Length: 314
Image (cartoon, rainbow, N blue to C red):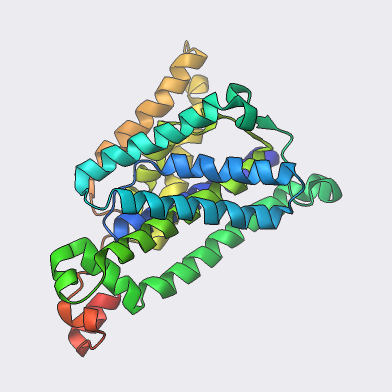
């Protein structure tokens, strides 16, 4: 039972990192990224392949984040004219395209067989203590990410991002480079997705295209929506809620007799769908709500009167 709880806690931390990346790109910059699972898989495969050639694990994680960020910035440049639903559809196709590459390029990724035997940090030396170590490591990364992102989003850069989210034309008139800001936000979000993928690969010691399906994107969007899509702490709270729903539904067979394994799996997806509908109907702003983050033209210049600064920084 302890091993199971440690596994769930570590997976929740990885989901939290994914949710934090979505808060940056969607909640702060207004770019809906339905292809986050593609960057998640990209980070996982990058780290797995690098460590397979003898690269230190820590360096492989950093490279995975950088590669995901670089591809994210390039994708943002290519789709710079797209907004709203159009961007969401293209990112969805991009994420699925990455999964198909992982599935078909057997010479590199192993195809549907995936990559197994991925090294984990200190696994052999720690023995039975490894699950505790990895859980602590994953949550430490979550805490560091929250602290750094909080400082970044309270800075003029964060206010400029929210200005772009609220009205790109006003931000451009105020002298801000809209494309640069959007690429920075998209790249930062992609870096977090890639880092989460690297953590996942070395945690499970196995990756395959089946690990990076659309359902994961839905889970992360539900997590961010549940907590409040612009709130960092909401991303972590939402990840805990989603994981609780997913794992508690596994025990439905004990209370509802006659369910097959396929029906239980379907029940999990049904529970997620119901949870999303309930949240959007009862509290669409999320549990932690949405602070007044609308950026003013004064805030963009960096000379913010006191009443405006208090609202723009939140």
